[in-house]
Length: 386
Image 1 (tube, rainbow, N blue to C red):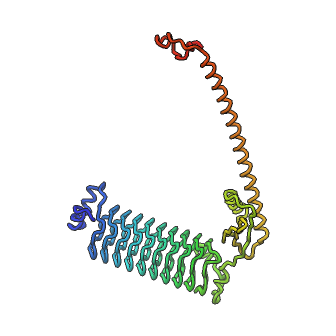
Image 2: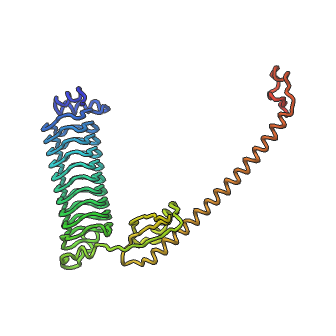
């Protein structure tokens, strides 16, 4: 429940509330679950406030400060949040359906599983925002900054994303079916297992984007794309793509390479082998597709590799790196055993020396007079000069 004093101050008006926040900045407002449906809260200072699942349906929060505010599960359906500052705000599972977030600052905001269906996010800043599993169907992202955002498993079906910046964003397994991505930026974007079926890609920049064979590019609507920033490296150089040509050109076909380990796997050595393989064979693109243990105890690791690569060379290189990693681990293990053996010998010698000292001390008579007079500093019959 909301703090009675805090809610009373808020009902006295935004000016009174903001002055109180200014005079007592150390107090974190507790407005948990408060009902502010339809309230006029333009320019309100809710930074760091605990609103929880508050009711803010159709509330006017234009230009409000919601920095790091707690709004998990809040109802912001149809709320006006244009130009509001929501950087670092917690909005997990919040309802922002049809909300107006035009020009809002949502950098680093947490919006996982939030519902922003048909929300207005034109020229908003969502850099590094967490939108994992969010519902964004039909949302308007025209000119929006989504650089480095997490959109894994998000649903952006039919979203309007013209000139949106998706550079370095994680779109793994996201759904962009029928989305308008005209002139959008996909520079170093992760788009593994992403569904772009029937999306519009004309004029998009796909510089160094990362896709795989599971990335769906069926029925893409695309006249041309750019492979470098500032509309450089146009493809096709002249004219337009024919129907289906974009998908054929950029969809990757993969084959399988199986590595069989008859006597089990040293997993640390295997991880090191993969790391070294990527360093030595940087030009090869491989993925682990499956790991299977047979009934006889043998392991089979299946790699997906591009069809146009030398599969025998990749298999040979992987096996070599694993053998080298195994040798390295065996050498380190032998050194550890040797060091442990030396430590044990040292401890045994120290134990023998202590035993001899104990025997010597045990054979000496105890000088009771010295013990009672306190003249000697050693209580076991050893003089100060011994």
